[in-house]
Structure formats: structure tokens, C-alpha cells
Amino acid sequence: MMSLLRFPAHVFEEFERLQRDLEQTLAGWPLSLREASGVPLFPAVNVGRTNDAIFVHAFVPGVDPNALDITLEQGVLTIAGKRGPWQPKEKETIYAQERFSGKFKRTLTLPEDVDPDQVDAKYRDGVLTIRIGRKAHLMPRRIAVQ
Image (cartoon, rainbow, N blue to C red; front, top):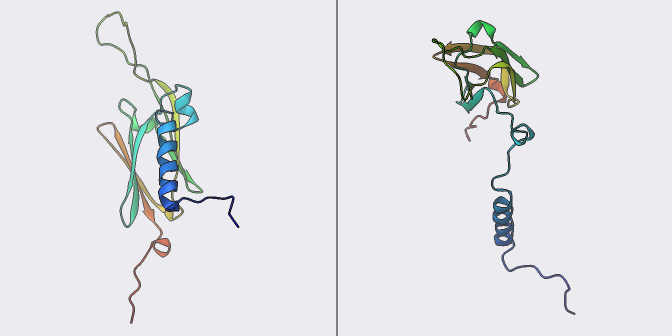
């Protein structure tokens, strides 16, 4: 009896082809609804980790460090604040102004192993660096075989 379903000889190759087709179809699409709306993400962030901490680098030039409000609640880091409008030093007519000013709020969901009791933030040269320790008992560990 002949089967009506036909599977390719290499099923995983077919999945890889489908993934490539999907990536090509979605290339150029915005990564989030906020990007799709044309609202720029501010502040821009870089997120990384080491074995014992998560690092968030938020780029907030022109923001007074005292105007920043940083909270960490249930694994969600929120960076909020306000940046005033840029003022030229001399009287000049402005033809284009692309610098963001006003209130901002950026939220990031962090991994489950962050420790809210081990957080510190530093601001230098327009970059806010937030270090969040990771819970030791949740970190992966190597187990020796005896």
C-alpha cells in the first residue's frame, strides 16, 4: 500500500530550509511594536553577562545622573528619567533636531537567576552601567564524577 504522506529523505534539512525561508521573508521587519511605530528606543542598551553577574550598559548622554530612576522588581529592570532639550550656545536657527528630549522609560526582562540584593549602578561619560549579581544556587555548576 502506498502512503499519501511523503517525507523528505532528510527531515532536518527541510526544517533548515523552512527556517531560511522564514528569515528571508521577515528580513527588514521591525523587531518590536515600538520600533514599528517609529518611536526610537531610548536609551539604547547593551546587555551581557559573566559567570557571576549580568551587565546592562545604557547610553544616556546629556542626562543628569540624579534624574535617573532605576528599579528592579520581579526580574524586570526599569530605567526611567528625563533629558532636557538641547540648547545651542549661541543664537542660531535650528533646521534639524534629531536629539531625543523628554521623559523616557526602558524596561528589560532579566534571567531568573538575578539577585536583587546585589545591584549597583555607575554613571560615567554618558554611559550608565548596572551590575546585577546572579544567585549562586541557580547558576550552572560543574559536578565532578567520582
